[in-house]
Image: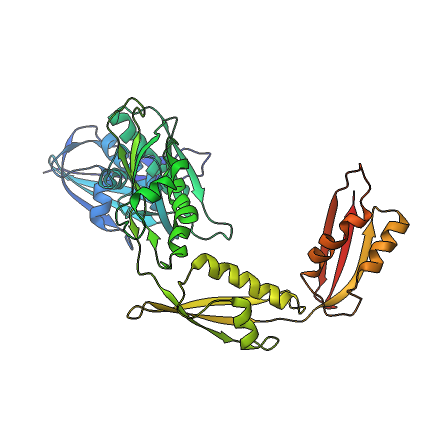
Length: 432
């Protein structure tokens, strides 16, 4: 019985070029696909490749169908090179894909920001059709982003939802917490209702009242999550629930109502944790200030509610205490030790005091010579004195009015420049 053989090599292309196809002349007749093989795999599984190809055993295929399957695989972004060959026996065909996987990339979370019409399972299943290894995270490559975008666009078309898939990479100011964020642009989904499953120590009603800015705003998972972190979590800290966490928000299309047509019902699960009382502070690395001075600056009392907002303010007071002694680059790293059985928390503080700075020069610009000299005479922090980081503000509160002229408006810019080499601080007051 005659056997046939054809080779097709698909080479990944530069963004400006179409993939190049090289094929040996092959018959256009239909063949029954009896087996699919894959060579060159390292991380991706053979079943994932088969699923992403769109081919199924037993189906009738021709060269055009195999070309299309190869294009789909290359479009997943999983491979830098991909080719296939097939052999036939009668009407049966065995196809072998030869692949070279893309270099390992950092996988980062994928956020479906406002896809309220679909469940998480539907979204993941749709993405796996184009990106078979998808598990809620995806590589940072443009190929992976394109694959996810295609899958989401298909979902929107299938559900006849107006809007376009918009992609935006996300990260915090330091470059951490990187995410792929996909959202539907052009679709308005106002928030109609809020629920906070798990709320007890703070009633759901109180959380909803404090979330009023969210109501009627267009739903965004990212925005709701950020709002809960910045606005609602401090309500728990204030009550000693230092380990309270808000989970990822979820949303569904709410029943249509006159006051909120086609809106979203949003659920923000909360894990409140225990309410803790203050036990003690444990200091390490301090030399310029004694433990007693640090405890006094902190101002926390044994047995009181471990109010997280008060503790944060207390840490600023500790920094100010060091600043008044010339230590302006204090390193302060807190750590918490929770005793659940007694519901107490101990804070440990690792201090790096750094160098002590002294006063350098005072420069006053923008005033008449007499006014500038009069202001300088009142400045008691002399060159060489231990620098006091609170002094500038205290000085201006007491003395600024002495150089103001009735009926005039002057702006003041203050510049404080530490010199790490000379360990001095130069201060400039610019009146404009």
